[in-house]
Amino acid sequence: MDEQDPKEDLIDTIFRNGTITTVGILLAFSLGFITHWAANPIPWQLHHLLAVVPILIGIALQMRALSMLLDTSCLQRRIYKRANRVFLTGLILTACGVGLAIMLDVFEMAGTSALPGGY
Image 1 (cartoon, rainbow, N blue to C red):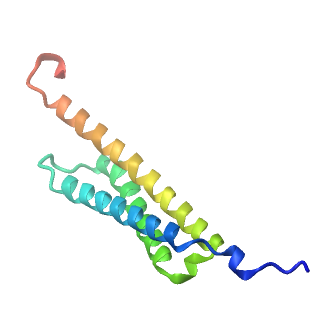
Image 2: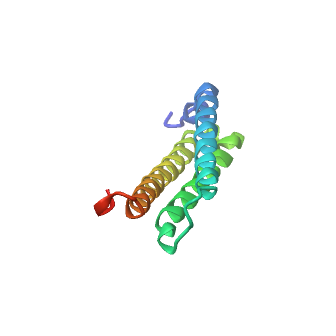
């Protein structure tokens, strides 16, 4: 009687649906940020890659997580948890890249300020 019920390893579809919604919304915000930043009037420099690379890797991981969650096999707890880990990794990378992008833009604007001392 050590056999486990196969349904015991499944998650409720309500969790999956909520997660898909969350991942989709945050992925859209991430894509919107990189699109907006790409259209920024400040000329791109090589050092901007410090921010762009983690953002793009993060977005790719978020897309991978969404792909995993859209597959019905993600109703299995182990696959669902893996998709969540992939998404959170992508979200953290994207957030770090966004933080770097903001810092780079602030430093860029501070360096070109008309005030004495660059402030």
